[in-house]
Image (tube, rainbow, N blue to C red):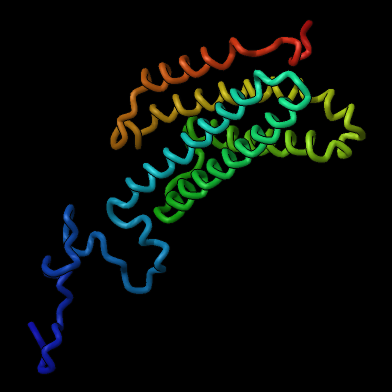
Length: 222
C-alpha cells in the first residue's frame, strides 16, 4: 500500500517482500534494526557463522605461526644464525599473539551481543588459560632478548632461556588440547562438525615434526 505521495506506508520486510529478504531466511532476518548500532550487523542472521569461521582462522593462524616460529629457531647454532632466528621467532610470535587476541575479541563480542554465557565449558576455560599463557610467554621472551636489564643482566636473562623454551613446547601441546576440547562443544557438534580425530591427527603430525628436533642441552639437560 502507498500513501498519496507514492511512498509505501508498510515496510516490505514486514510483508515478506522487497530487498530486505535475504537468500536464506525470511525478510528482515538480515536487516539492521532501528536504534541498533551498526556494529551489531556483524552478528545478524548467518553472520554468526562467518564470525565463527574467522575466529577459527585467526586461532589456527596463531597456532600455525607459533609452530613456524619454533621450527625457524630450532636449528640455529652460530651467533649470527641465533640472532637472525630469534628476530624472526619474535616477529612470528608477536603476530601469532595478535591473531589470537583478535580471535578472542571476536568470540567474546559475539557472546556479549547475544547474551551468551562465558567460560562455561572445558574448552572455554582451557582457551582463556591458553590465551593468557601465550601473551605471558611472548612478553617474557621479548623482554629476555630485547631488554635483558629487566632481569638484572644479560646473563640472568640467558639463564632463563631454557624455561622459556620448555614452556613454549608445553604451550604448543596445550594449544592442541584446547582445540581438541573445542570439538566437544555444542556449537561444533551442531554447526561446525569438526572431527576430534582430525584434530588429533593434525596435532600428532605437528608434534612428530617439532619435538624430535629439540636439543636437550638447550633445555638444561646434559
